[in-house]
Image (cartoon, rainbow, N blue to C red; front, side, top):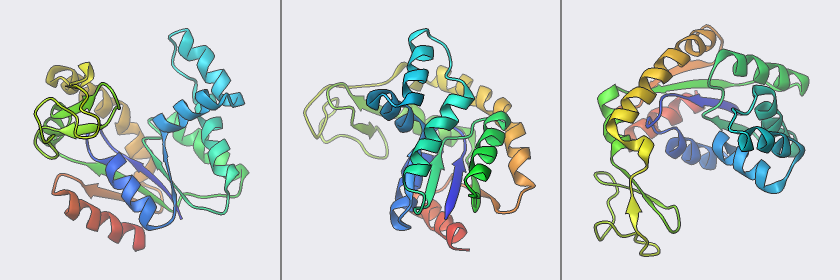
Amino acid sequence: MNIVLFGPPGVGKGTQGEKIAAAHGMRHLAMGDILRAAVRDETAAGRDAKTYMDAGKLVPDAVVVAMIEDKIVADAGTGFLLDGFPRNVAQAEALAAMLHKHDLIIDRTIFMDAPEENLLKRLSGRLICRACGFGFHRQYSPPLKSGCCDRCSGELYQREDDREDVIANRLHVYREQTAPLLDYYQHQEGFFKLDAGGEMNVVYAALQTIVES
């Protein structure tokens, strides 16, 4: 099975996507991880991406899709779950063309959404370890000792883009950019909208029902 999981920042795509992919034997393809791995491994697409990143420019959609193609083609017999991609209609169309080339389809397109106040609370509570990068949350998964990582005792900090004022702007921009993408997918077969504002286990159960439907 091949799945596209998309939604606003803080909605839980990464957490839920990873669990669903593991439960169904799919590869969890998170765009950020794919980009970093391609650059690190110096793949053709990774080298292309690095030239744009080094120049402070956005990586073009064609290069991003090429990275995803590398991952999908490397193990074509295994299903995948795309987390955080596509982000706009142009990327969705490029993805569809690439999959068509390989005789592949998207079986489920799932839009996870939640009230903005929930997203603000989730994102503004995030804490990251400076040493090992492990994440915590002030409310949902606090460290045993305030300001100190449970894993390596490193210092915990809040990223600049997790401040409430920055988050509010990120969500505003996201809503504007995603409206056309939502319209693009919601008229296609296999589209589902999921209320992800509840408890994590409730959202996961609802996601399982969609995947297994």
